[in-house]
Length: 323
Image 1: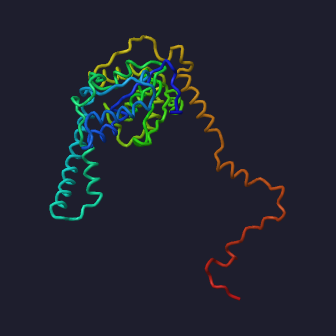
Image 2 (image 1 turned 30 degrees about the horizontal axis):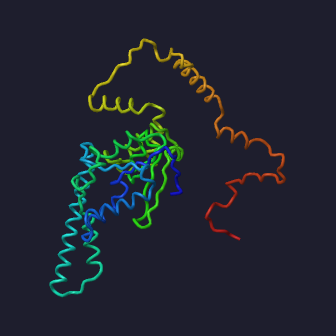
């Protein structure tokens, strides 16, 4: 844990499902493990982070309505995993009944698909640390300036109250954490904190998908062009025009050319343009300058230029030479 040294007064807020779901899926799908044994293994992974009085655990509750698309995608993935597990178990059954040789991949494939098909329901979760809906909102509300969030969900770094995120890496036996400090991320992306929210919306998250064919670097350039305008006003104006189909008229009686920020009027610019075009017509062209230069004498010439050939006395081109 040398990547980040927590301040004694800070808290380490752990998104249990978002950081240790692989461990949960493995322990709960293991037929040789009871529920208590599964949670004991989960506790063993949690106490590796820090002292118990410094840890604050959060577990997802009921699905949020705003994440209906994400929930539907997860259910589709579990449905596909169940179909693959059913086929793998049918193959394993066929080998057992017909005394065929059972190889290692027959067992590992079935076990892998069963782990992917598991559904960690609300009834199976830890009741004492269960949130009302998703853990995201609860964590960002409780998070303080010196706290750290442990999760593999990168969306949490977008919230203003989250200063740093520990992202788990590796497996259960060799787990380590990468530190994502928000100040360092903003410096690397060269964007302000308010524009980071818009960048997350463009680049895809649990609520919206990414813009097709655009990567995060292109999205970052688009966000930088917005300037320092407030993101709430941008979203408000966009919704007003595209959804409500309304626009506000700017009430002003002062001509644009008479404002203090306009130093040159259109008439001044038009007059300058006419003056430049007159000068352009009086300026010799490139061909005229070339002809004038060719007529001037070359003071460095050492051989006189031969006189032009008389066409009437010179042998015509392609004619037969007579000696």
